[in-house]
Structure formats: structure tokens, C-alpha cells
Length: 264
Ligand SMILES: Nc1nc2c(ncn2[C@@H]2O[C@H](COP(=O)(O)OP(=O)(O)OP(=O)(O)O)[C@@H](O)[C@H]2O)c(=O)[nH]1
Ligand SMILES: [Mg+2]
Image (cartoon, rainbow, N blue to C red; front, side, top):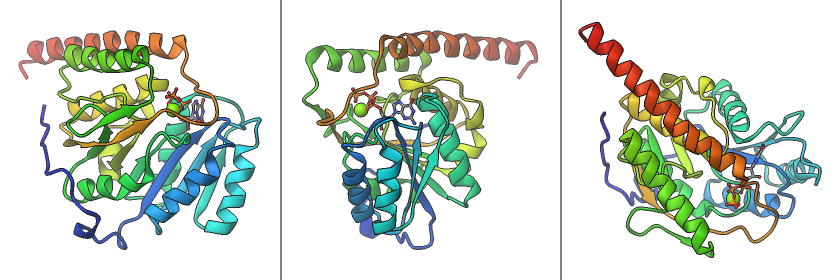
């Protein structure tokens, strides 16, 4: 496993963005109350980046609002899926389309304003300086969550400790939804075959990248509870993430045995 901790807090001025094609992938389901503000804030933070909204035909008209925002702000593409297929499917479709369009860095950010787009240049700066994945992390010094009830905080914090401990990830916030990936790393880790949805998707992606020898940086962020719209967190998503950790642990063990048998 190779995790290189690069200097965090790299300022926007360190990096010349104009040559790098950045696509910001935003999965949305019923985010009509948030999507326009999110588009405006991302555009302010990253004037040249493309925004790719992956919407699962939200009944509240999120996609139409995103398209209208695109007419005003420019460089916003809406990828409409036919049905609600979950977070993992939305990211797979979004990353695939971004790469096909020539992206060199893929960012992911939630559409509910829980993540502050002002942090995005710092995540990009870390990729520019050699990281394969820069995570906007709540659980490194300087990171925090605001307005989450204690039970939710405990579930997230201990869920992360469990996943990192069992899988040996050496990552503090493997479930984080605010990230930047280098496209070269995404291609190397074969992201289309990542199966999990919900928080599990983030954990499986992190595990894949660590096993592929990827370099990961965690950059401290403040995560705020959504103000508008409804959470899609369900018991099923938590259950999936717990089972996933077991599945990945077994796969690691099988891999180690096979390598031992073949003398590798
Ligand atoms: N395309 C798509 N987006 C989804 C789906 N489920 C959730 N999302 C979006 O993914 C992002 C994160 O989802 P949230 O509902 O905020 O879920 P969460 O962050 O796990 O839960 P909270 O912290 O309680 O808000 C938001 O932008 C959602 O709109 C889905 O099935 N398809
Ligand atoms: Mg959320």
C-alpha cells in the first residue's frame, strides 16, 4: 500500500488551471431547492470548469432548473437518467461521460450544499501536485461537521473507523462525498466495475485506489447538514456499506492467498 501525504492547504495561486480540463460531477435527486445556488457557487469557485449534473429524472424538476442555470452561467451539462438508480450508478455514468469528453480531473460534490464549493481549487491543487485522489475530509485536524445530530455523527465517525480498521485503508474519511480524482487514476482503478451505491461507493472507490497503489491526500473541510430538501440516507444504504466492508475484506484475503500460492 502506498499512501503519500502531500502538503495540504495548497493555495489556488500555486496552480495554473487553464490547461487542465476539470469536470465537476454532481449527482442529484430532488435537489430543486439547492441546485441553482450550487451551480452559481461552483461557477464562482471554478469559472472554467464544466458542471455535469447527473439527475435521475427528479420529480421536482431539478434537471430543468439546472438547464436554465446553464443557459445563464454557461458550461453546464445535464445528464438525465431514466430512473432513480442510486448514487453509484450516477457517479459511474458521470465519470464515464466526463472522461469521454476529455476531462483530466474529475470532481464530485453533493448537490445539497453540504460541501462548500470554495474548497474545490484546493482539492484540484493537490491533484496538480501529484495526488491521485484528494478527499474533502471531516476527520482530519481542521475538518468538522456542523448541525449533525450526535447519533448521525457517531454513525459516520465509527463507520469510518470500522472500514479503515478492517480494510487497512489509512484514510480518515473514506465515506466522504467531496473528492477530486485524476482521470489517469480513475482509469487505472477500473471504476466502471465498482458495484456499491450510497456511502459504500465512496468506500469501494477508496479501497480500489489504495490497492492500486494510489496516492491519497485528505484536505480538511467543514460539512454542513443540508438546509433544504430531503436526505436520501436509508437503513439500506448503511446495511450495504457494512456488508461491503466484509466483501472487500474477503476479496483482499483471497487475493493474498492466491499471491502466496503463486509465489508472488
Ligand atoms: N442521481 C442520483 N443522485 C442521488 C441519488 N441519491 C442521492 N443522490 C444525490 O447525491 C447527493 C448526496 O445525497 P444526500 O441525500 O445528501 O445523501 P446524504 O448526503 O447521504 O445524506 P444527508 O447527509 O442526510 O443529506 C445529493 O446531491 C443527492 O441529491 C440517486 O439515486 N441518484
Ligand atoms: Mg447530503
